[in-house]
Amino acid sequence: MNAFPPHNRTLPPSDGLTEAERARILAKAAAFAPPSMQDAEGRRELVGLSREELAAEMVAMGEKPFRAKQLWHWIYHQGARDFAAMSSIAKPLQARLAERFTIGRPGVTTEQTSTDGTRKWLFAFRDGQQVETVYIPDEDRGAVCISSQVGCTLSCTFCHTGTQRLVRNLGAAEIVGQFMAARDSYGEWPTPTGEDRRLLSNIVVMGMGEPLYNYENIAKALTIIMDHEGIGLSRRRITLSTSGVVPMMDKCGAELGVNLAVSLHAVTDELRDEIVPLNRKYPIAELLAACRRYPGASNARRITFEYVMLRGVNDSEAEAHELVRLLRGLPAKVNLIPFNPWPGAPYKTSTPEAVNRFAAILNDAGYSSPIRRPRGRDILAACGQLKTESERAKRGGAA
Ligand code: SF4
Image (cartoon, rainbow, N blue to C red; front, side, top):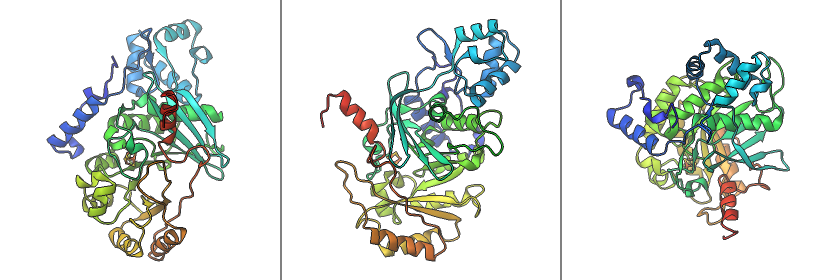
């Protein structure tokens, strides 16, 4: 059993949630809790433990707490996966650590690199569950898009992942592990410091799942990733994308302060109720009010609104003008995403003319609104598809 099951920890009373909201979120987290982080020999996984938990493990084995600092450096700065490589730790202690603990990574089921440089992994965890992680390169840097859940509860109608039922939440180790495994793949250890160039410069929590429905594990993982004595990625380089779990947005802003991206995709509640069903619980006005409250929402740290362009559904000029009206006064950027079709999808991609007209209206109103080029089309037609393809292969190629 995981010594620190997320559902056994209580959310602090200062989080602004009502009792009912808190109880509902904790019950959901418990129902979809990640598996134990002990292997068959009873060895505990160290990746994913907070500094305090790591220190407690050291004390429990009769070591001084400073050992946790050493281990932290080796695990998160050097990227060590083997205690025998930890030269500042004496050999007898290396052996005792190896008896009790592991420093793991998710298993790589597939790794594919697109002609445009995008790299995608299908990672497998201890219980065989799999998620996708994607590296999206830019000129001299790039973002790793990590998943937060296996499947998703939210069933957004344009999203391929939304067709896969929620299996479970990912644990902190599995979330940090995706980024660490991506770094392994690019040989980016030890953590670059100062002006050193790094390819994997940013993280977007935008893969499978709704991160704010797995907040405790996401928060723990991002706190580890931001720790300046380890991976050391600043909060400005991390963007968390949500479909609009309003009560948790406040908590995320107060506790993590990472950049926020919001999957908006519609400008009326009527349409958003349909394509992002979470809207029925947290409608557009409540969502935008939470965005306006989000700390640090300044011009330097604009909130990103994701808007998938669906032909004849949400891409009219009138809708662009309405979007401008809704966002008025909010430091915002709008990412326009031409819909990436998947088999059986109920939508078509907007025409380039419609996308350009929509973008021009937003730009004229002062909102940066880049049109996102589809990336990695040759290795994955739509987010969520790699996992589906793998499941199909396991079933023996049945369509
Ligand atoms: S868009 Fe995000 S929240 Fe919606 S179904 Fe897909 S993965 Fe889930």
